[in-house]
Length: 123
Image (cartoon, rainbow, N blue to C red; front, top):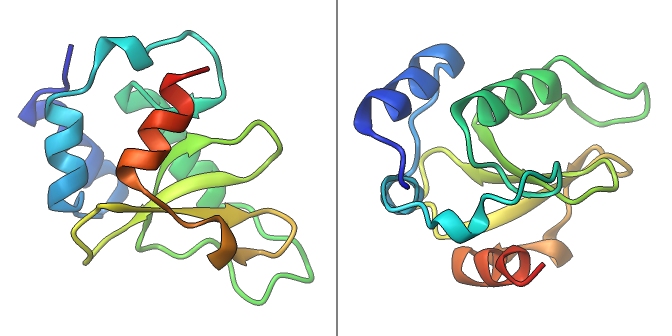
């Protein structure tokens, strides 16, 4: 099912971000089993990734220490208001949870890409 290079380039151009290499390879070989039609889990379309990243960047609670960092790319949703992300400038093998309650990445919720995929692939 995977994304093609043109789709990945459109994400990068629209969001002014470089997709980390490990996550880029994952998207190129995206497993069809992760396409569930649900809002939660791994984002499986250009539109989901772009829309969720843009929405996250444009929202900030008054008590957050900073807005959603521009070097984060939204890659999934936990169903409770927080966004799973990969970080530009890293390999892309770690997935972070940007907590809407903390207004920051929650270090205790950091997952390897493999764990993230296994978690949402078993839903």
